[in-house]
Amino acid sequence: MLAIEGLTVRFGGLTALEDVSLHAAEGEVLGLIGPNGSGKTTLINALTGIYPATGRVRFREVDLLGLPPERIVRLGLVRTFQNLRVFRRMTVLDNVLAAQNGMPDMRFADLVGGRRRDAERRERARGLVERVGLGGDADRLAGELPLASQRRLELARALVRDPALLLLDEPSGGMTPAETRGMTELIAALACPGRTVIVVEHKMALITGLCTRLAVLNFGRPIAIGEPAEVLRRPEVVEAYLGTESYR
Ligand SMILES: Nc1ncnc2c1ncn2[C@@H]1O[C@H](COP(=O)(O)OP(=O)(O)OP(=O)(O)O)[C@@H](O)[C@H]1O
Ligand SMILES: [Mg+2]
Image 1 (cartoon, rainbow, N blue to C red):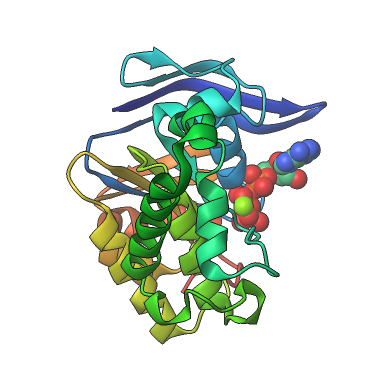
Image 2 (cartoon, rainbow, N blue to C red):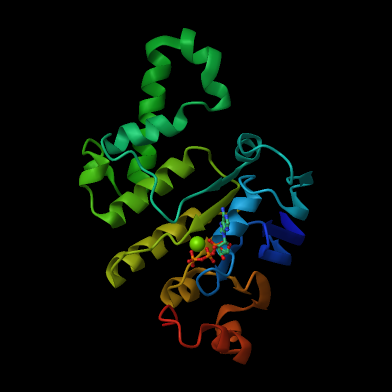
């Protein structure tokens, strides 16, 4: 589904990603780990057209590099953010409705479609809110919810596009172990046949409970890829994490 070949991203003199090659199959949950600053978020930004990159990225036979971000979203690549991006002063339901704005089927039809269409949108948004476990919070302000719920809301906003490739940047960041388990289960439920998930995460509990394969970045280069438990035992991976707090 996704084939990354020789992907390189530079910021002036700094090479954030260097010659990264990586594949993801249909329906796979691929974990991506690496020390702070190793290029994980940069990889997501390059795939989604936010950062210019060189190399080649093919997604279902389409070359992604150079396409504008909005085109890439429409092809079915959708990401969430390491630093939450929900509208804190809007309700949970309105956050999801806002994510629906600007979708291709919403434009002209929306202006003339009237109430029936509006009701359909709300119903769909409510369904997504329930799907991420926030049914009871639909009418609360997003900013009043605990962080774990806000991360769930971000997922609901991403699901609006029914993504074929979901890119999650530290979806359990700031969560307690119990909340992390809940998020792991939710992501597992979202990874259905036909949808691939790439998840950037530091927490090993989430990685090992969820991922079919694990890729490790260090200084912008992939240093290992394979079955998670096996990859985590490799000396070069252990060494890359040595002395960092993140490895647990
Ligand atoms: N827009 C940018 N301009 C300049 N340098 C950047 C930019 N974005 C990222 N970098 C640099 O690229 C490198 C990789 O950063 P990136 O955010 O991808 O790391 P990361 O693996 O996501 O780290 P973390 O675990 O802390 O989230 C870092 O050295 C970072 O400072
Ligand atoms: Mg990051």
